Structures are given as structure tokens and as C-alpha cells.
Length: 152
Length: 152
Image (cartoon, rainbow over all chains, first blue to last red; front, side, top):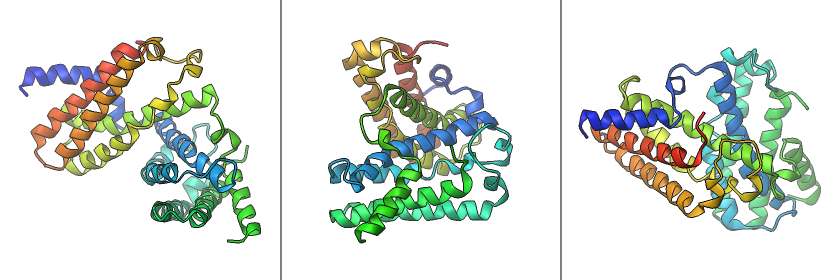
């Protein structure tokens, strides 16, 4: 497109609510909001799977496959928001997030590995294996929360 | 795994912060939080692309491909949160979201179609085409916001 069309489109981009702050250095409160958003969505898509594993929600393989796929993408999104500039923000992140980064990274990797396994297992259609792997994912959530998130 | 192991794992699942509410009927404020989280993350991953299209951020094809892929998943996440039970929540969603659902769905589909195109174009490596398509995605964001989101 020519430059005047581009200018119009880009004005619309800005109007769409993506101001400079969104692509310059993100502010601490923005980083927190973004990482918490990733956690909220992980909860949205993991919650029903936990319910299925517990027998509180009818087992639905299509939902498992879809949600596992979503989690496989969402699980990449929170971590770059846990930078040292956010350590004075009021959140439930424990100081260990910033002081024991090796262990925090290991916990992230463990979670990602369990989600990757869930994606694979969810396609097999073996309900018992899927439920067991949902449990393993939940366990990796809990392991990280236990060490790096303040209890409520 | 046997049932006692399962019970332990599932206790951990619950401890991980996915209480019943997460997989039973979500409450209006939860639905709002979830859909806003999807919007926040779309902003996180679209923002840098808008910056590239505007020449304010150096063009980086790897980031475009990655973020386009993320947007291709994130763009499926907000819409089921816009249910009528949320219409009295304090948000920027305009009444048209709940009264002109056909047009709202059309706007979602338009956005999804533009993101799908961006995913394809981003792999071509043609910078000008990618930037034009980033503009088209931004335009579809703005078109929906103009009609369905209260101005600040």
C-alpha cells in the first residue's frame, strides 16, 4: 500500500488501543498485568481439565485436545513478565522468583514439559492416561506455586 | 495410577489454584477477567508488530512469526466471555455487544481472518507485505473497538 494509506491504517492501529507503551519498554505494572493475564487464561483452560480428571465434569476429549493446545501456547507467555523491575509491585510473586531464578526456570520447564506430554497424550484418546497426565500438569502448577507464589 | 495417587495429585490440582469455580459455571466477574486477559495478551503480542509497521521498532521477522502464531491462538479466547450474564459488569463493552451479536460475531470473524492472513504472510519474509498485513490486523481491531468498546 502507499504511504498515505499506511499512515491511515497505522493511525487506526494506535486508535485500536496499542499505544507506544505497548511496544516500547513495558512498565512494571504492564508486565504484571500481562503475566497475570497469562495465568488467568491458563486457569480458564486448565480448570475444566482438572474437573474432568476429578470426575466432576464429564470427560470430553475434544475439549481436552483443544485446551491442551491452548495451554501449550499460553505456557510460553507469563515468564518474561517476571523481570526484576517488577519486584516492588504488589503481587503474590515471592522474592524467590527474583533470587532463585535457576529453580524458577526449572519449574517453568517442568510445567512446559508436562503440558507437552498432555498435548501428545490427549490425542491418543486413552481416557485414563489423559486424566493421569492432567494430574501431572496440575502437580507441576502446584510445585511452582508452592515455591514462588504467596499463599492466600 | 491407582486411586490414592490420583487423590493426592488431584488435591494438588486444587491447591494449584483451580477451584471449583474454574470449571463449573463461571461467574460474570470471572468471565470478564478472562476475556480482558485475552485482550491484554493480544495487546502484548500485537503491540510490537504495530511498532514495526510504523518503523518505531526494528523489523524482526522471527518476532512477527512468533507473535502472529500467538495471536492466532489468542484470538479464539475472548469471545465466549461476552455472554449476557456479564452485561451489568463494569467494563468498556458497549450494549451493542449483547444486542447486535451478528455484527459482533462478524467483527470477530474479520479479525480472525486478518490474523490468519498475517500468519501466512509472516512466513513469506516479504517485509512490505507483512507490514501491510499488520496494518490490516490493526484495522480490524479498531473496527471492532469503534463499534463495541466505549471510548476512554
